[in-house]
Length: 595
Image 1 (cartoon, one colour):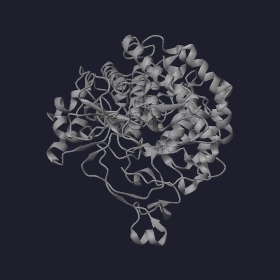
Image 2 (cartoon, helix red, strand yellow):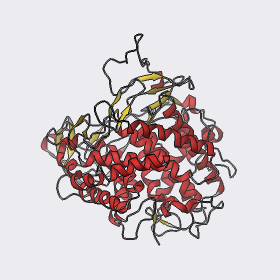
Image 3 (cartoon, one colour):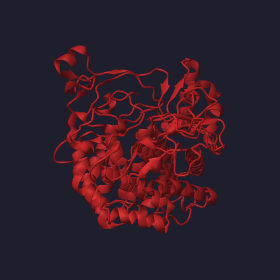
Image 4 (tube, helix red, strand yellow):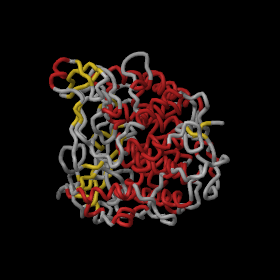
């Protein structure tokens, strides 16, 4: 859905860390292996697990062997699972519906999820509910054909327009798939459920390779991909990378042009260039989460693991190049130009360079640390050590991250989303304890709950809440979360997840405040109880406090949208994949809590 654009607070360069990029949805997938994931970890029939077992949250060396199927793991998690006090079976079932559609429908075109336009035929749409209420067969390990198999509905006929799979949305869906598989594999998922989840993760592994290789230039990565032979984003006209004289097109670099396959490998795919920071961070979160879960899992092809390492090394090596302007950490495109919003250097303020600042430092450190966790070679580790030590990125994070919250009504919530994502990556993958302490301090006291300015801790943005709770308990790749974690943050995050609309998510128009209320500045929301003060900012009506999730207008990714937005238009034939719900829930289920 269209998001409100905020003007930038020019006096605060740090607030320029906007998530520049089309706020388009992520959609379908290519033709990699089909699989049916099963988030049925919540099913009442699932036996309660018993003993501890391997997962990245318990330590790097903890996942050396594949657990038996079903495993006997019984570890506690940030968001409680079956057999754990506080487990919410209703929420788990709600997420399972989103998972089932993710596997059977949203990833059908390219292997990557995104928003769809579907037929208005009520008979066909009723079959979606049939699918969601029909258990898969006990031996059915392939979820990708579920819609046709269990309802007779052909996804290619049901969908009228396929959206592209883009980094922020499809990338975080990859992370959700990785977390889901890790939970099912390590904490008592039945064998069919584990196999279905594994197949979806393998499908995503192949699709992620396409995202990197389709550009034809090592170090570049697509903003998104789409099928050229299907209606939707893939039918967009393409622009050549260069003209007949070899000059880059378009003459002035923009925020994304559709390109033909530049690798010679994917004739039925097109890609959009100018990968912005937020889209890059989504891809990176997906890649790092995937790697963390499959690294020591012998059921995944060793050649594919090596391929993922090679792909991410190419991206990292590109970021390490010191360009003509004297800066590294710039993302460049296949047309030999920097992407429009691909500046990650710690002194960047969106597309310009200023002083070293906390927000830019957090984004740079999270991005690099995550890639280094995958590449895992001496040169890459030395580069990360330079960012941590000589260049002082953790110090910048601890000292000046709070400035991002001083923009007030002008805050760009895509920027907040980027900071929490890269905060997760930095705190999880930076191995130096002292540096991680500074990252934690910046995350909690300057970003999540600062003394002054905007306070995301009040917004009940579930992904932010779970990331903050993990940091509060010092959880990272090498250790589980301590029992002293911020339980209030987890409770706040869960309160929003349980309020998500059920799948299939069809965005409906929301009018909390009518014209008269908007003019008066005082509004009672559609629940008839909650009262807020409202005003118009940049053409959008916003409240003086975050709107409860059940009443918020539609969004394709709530953690990237302003939680103060009051009204919003819907689209009766749109289906949204629920990337926001899935990544928050499965991250919470994946993060281990120490005994």
